[in-house]
Image 1 (cartoon, rainbow, N blue to C red):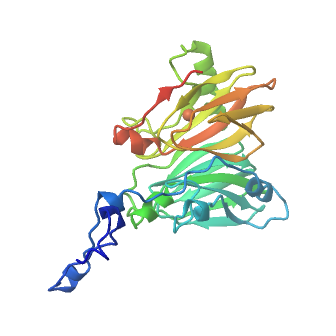
Image 2 (cartoon, rainbow, N blue to C red):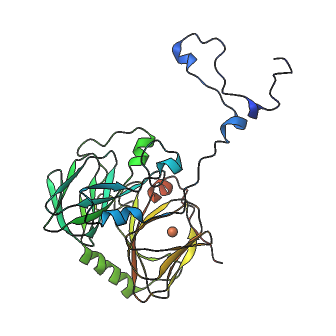
Amino acid sequence: MPDSVRPRSIADLPPQTAAAPETAAQGRARFFNPGNAFNVILPAVPDVAFTAEPARALDPATPTGLIPCDISDVLECPFPATSPFVLASYGRIRAGESLAMDVAASGIVHFVIDGVGSTVSGDETIAWSKGDVFITPGGVPETHTAGAEDAVLWIVTNEPQFAFERAQAPAPGTAPTPVVHYPAAEIQRQVDLIYDIGRGQEIPGAAVIMSSDMQVESRNALPTLTVAMNTLDPGVVQRPHRHNSVAVSLVVSGTNCYSKVDGRKKMWSPYATTITPPVAVHSHHNEGDERAFFLIVQDGGLFYHARAMGFAFVDA
Ligand SMILES: [Fe+2]
């Protein structure tokens, strides 16, 4: 190679190809090096709150349908995504109407923001009402039907994780979760139990973690997703901490609450979906006068399995 065209560093080399490929497969090979392969800069997961999407979902003028919290353009993902591995959407279902879904994900997490209705998943039916959480297996078509009034659901999946690997939906009967229902009154009973017994400050929050008989060993809802109803009493600050999982959270209730994420204050608003970026130092604050509730979905199962959760308290 003449000196005039010789790169000064291997970092300046373009992708290399075989000099004399003998087959089409050899012709497809590309070669990089530590100088030009490890400097791909992906956009950071932003510290954002979605407020327009819940406003639209709660607007009586909005027709039945799914409203995704999709920032795939920001994340530069070629598929809808709220975070690299998680997609949150609002489902509005007008009274008496139905919303059908069939997703390539290992499971679907639902929270009932408003209304009464039912969901058919395979041969099981769940009758739900406001405040319920229910989880259904991916790869099984499901239909949500609202009762006499309009209903709004918060719906979270790991579809981006499947899309990233071009994975197909699990075959019927093979998803890693059954249909699981956590009625609002039972969630409240579990929250009360936690407050009755109390905890030390080494336990990072007053939350109910939702799992199932099938996932009891993992303590997760799905192999890669964790689901928790977190709570915060008036005047309480949840101790600052960080973890490598992203949190996609729904503000369920509470007034005058906010999060601090890497020093920035982010006010809560009713039924907003908020992202806590991975690794960011964050704390939650309740300066109102009632117990606050927020439902958190994290891709924590991925990091637990990789032995790379990276949880740490970061006290100021
Ligand atoms: Fe956290």
